[in-house]
Image (cartoon, rainbow, N blue to C red; front, side, top):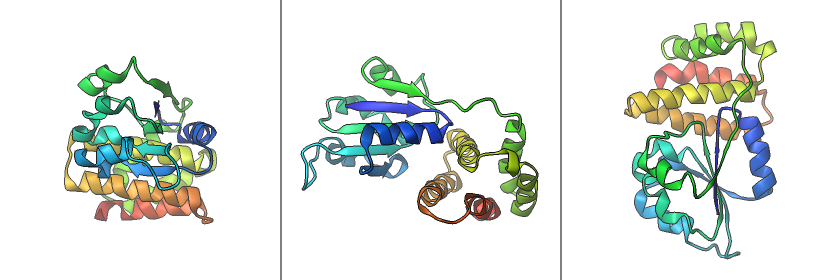
Length: 201
C-alpha cells in the first residue's frame, strides 16, 4: 500500500506517519534514489519480515524516479511518501492520483510568512543577517514549522534550477531534519547553524 502525505506542516504529517507506521520504519531519501533501486525498495523483503514499513521523503524532486512510481502501486509493503508539494501536471501524478491515498497537511496561515521567506533568501548571501532577522520572530514561531517553510523554499529553488548547489541544500536540509528529530540540542541553534552555512553549500 502506498500513501502520499503532502504539505508544509511537517509536525502534523510526522504525527500521522507515526500513527500509520509505528515507531520503527525505514527512511529513504527520494533525492538519492536511482530507477534501478526501485524494485528492491518496493518489492524486496527484509531479513526479518515479508512486509516492510517505509517512509520515502521528497521523491518527486527526483523526476526520473518519480515517473516510475506508477509501476510499483502493487507493493506488498506499507509505504508512505512524504512531499512538501506535488506537481499535479506530471504524468506520474495523473497516473496515481485515483489509486493511492493522498492527504494534505497545510500549515495554518502565518503572519510572519513573508519574513520567513525573506530570511531564507537573505541567508543565501548573508547568514549573519538572516540569523539577526530570525531573532526578531523566533519567539512567535515553532522551529519545526519554520524548518518546513525553509524546506519549501529550497524545493522551489530546486524546481526552478536543478543545479549542484540546490541538490546540496536539499541534502543538508534532510540532515537537519534528522537532527531536529533526534538531537537534544535547541532546535533554533541547529536552524541558525544551517542559515549561517547556507551560503557555502
